[in-house]
Image (cartoon, rainbow, N blue to C red; front, side):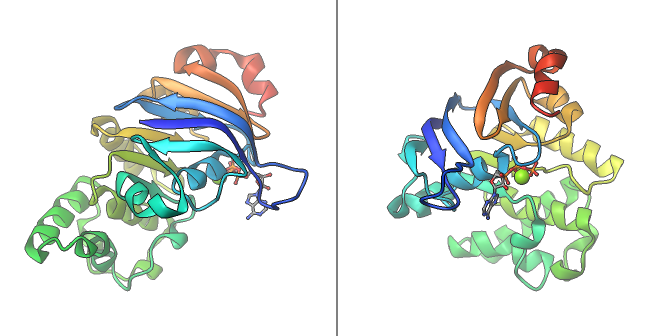
Length: 233
Ligand SMILES: Nc1ncnc2c1ncn2[C@@H]1O[C@H](COP(=O)(O)OP(=O)(O)OP(=O)(O)O)[C@@H](O)[C@H]1O
Ligand SMILES: [Mg+2]
């Protein structure tokens, strides 16, 4: 479902430092994979590359068989929904409902259907009361959940989640974990929350300085304290 081959990404095109270096891995349909690594390891860079926000300097990315390129971006963004690390990068409509409805409206879905779907997603996230609030005036955790609702409403094949649990209070975090656990989608979840990784991800991809440091079963990798220490975790 996700295929990354020899991916190198540079923020400064001719610069010597690459944010991702010759990274390769595949994620099968329905897998939930935790993307771990210290601050600056390249997690967000990888997720942004997968939705075509950052171009690859070399190598290739595919989602559900579609290459991530300028001309396929519409298709890629239909297949993969991303929740950004900073929800302020995501929420741009005046109200939470408008934000959630924006994507489905673009696909010409009838308003009553959108409303029904939005209601049920907000309820499952425990934020029905935020429906008509101004997005910009929400708390950090509320923004995070509203951004997630806007992605879930599109029902994409692949979910790319950058720190989905950050800013959440314990109850919202538990609810989030339950929701992600129950979703059938392929998920790649960048997180520092090792407990979340342990609870819902069967597999871990561990980055160190933009390179693949480990890729394997979560229980095995999280037991390897020397490896985690070496990767700054
Ligand atoms: N806009 C940018 N311009 C230049 N360099 C950047 C930019 N964004 C990130 N970087 C650099 O790219 C590298 C990878 O950053 P990235 O944001 O992918 O890390 P991360 O693993 O998501 O970290 P965190 O856990 O802090 O979110 C870092 O060295 C970072 O300083
Ligand atoms: Mg990040």
